Amino acid sequence: MPETAHRLAAFTESVIRGTTRLANQYGAINLSQGFPDFDPPEELLLALERATRGPHHQYAVTWGSPGFRQALARKIGRFSGLEIDPDQHLVVTCGSTEAMMVAMMTACNPGDKVIVFSPFYENYAADAILSGAEPIYVALRPPDFQFDREELAKAFECKPKAIVICNPSNPCGKVFTREELLFILDLAERHDVFVITDEPYEHIVFGENEHVHFAALPGAFERTITCSSLSKTYSITGWRLGYVQAAPRVIAQARKVHDFLTVGAAAPLQEAAIAGLELPDSYYVGLRDLYSRKREVFLECLREVGLPFTEPQGAYFVLMDLSALGFVNDTAASEWLVKEIGVAGVAGSSFFREPVHHLIRFHFARGEDTLREAGRRLLAVRSR
Ligand code: GLN
Image 1 (cartoon, rainbow, N blue to C red):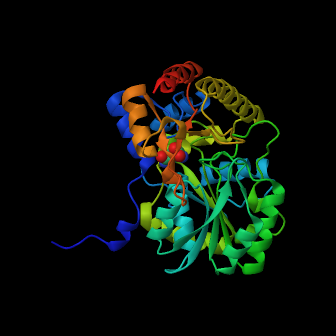
Image 2 (image 1 turned 180 degrees about the horizontal axis):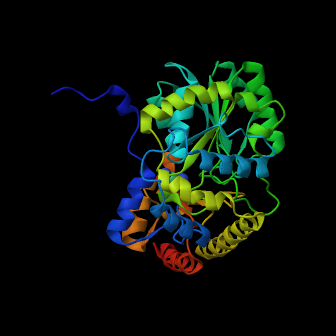
Image 3 (image 1 turned 90 degrees about the horizontal axis):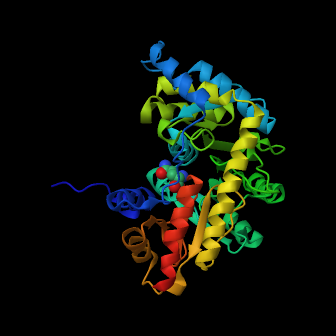
């Protein structure tokens, strides 16, 4: 029989989604794939009901329905200060997942190199490979996940076509400072490189940390391809609504990639999500407070467990160090956690280029009671 394509040998199925399936099979509390267990805002639910009765059951414009793009442009402008033209700067996609694939395929020729910070969200390596590009890695170094400026400058010497920045970062919770981003922008300008950003956690930042929109840095817009989504901001991960935002010459090409990949995101859901994009600023303050509380509750539980872990500046992930428990690797640890402890987390090695086999990623987008119950179950790891 014919063989399947060789490029698929270079990556595995998603460990995140696989762990979710395992969690469901064993009835574990699922702190692996990051998504909320609570409802979206009431305004969205009402708008969804209305959308089912409207004329929105056929294809929308392939790069996004006009009403959705207009609301999205206003919302982006409100938080970034950018003047977004809904007709020239946006392609609506099926989640930031598709947006990233579109961005890579739009930016890269086969054989091009793409700089990816490690740890990284597992899709980036697969996206680069599927678009014919080769990921090259620059380490974010624990405990604060700073990058070495010389190492990054060296990576830019390898003639990359693009760099990917996940900000706030999944899985390490880093929020890049304006100064770090300006340093990256300077390198990108000197080497004429695209900056592809992934910013679905833009509204989930803690304490003093502030999210900086890369595209809004002085002079950055023309070379930035921003990927983001509504999934985390409005607790609608299953609606699969994301977008690419870039300069018109890039968007003109990205539209083609998107059109031939998926034709479009779900029309009634675009219609309903406008209600989210129009929520007042107070909604975002509330979201930030909500996740700050969850973070406090969960970190307090983890302190009681007594193993080291990262304290995120943004997004909703924690990397916990299980080396003291003596597992052969993190995959074994992750399976044991699901089956014996009843809590699912993702084996950390799926996020690292380096051979890192002692970390488990947990997310805390869960109700406080569920987080406390997960914490109570995790106490049992101490007696291993
Ligand atoms: N971003 C979430 C995570 O890392 C889930 C994304 C997904 O599964 N599409 O868990």
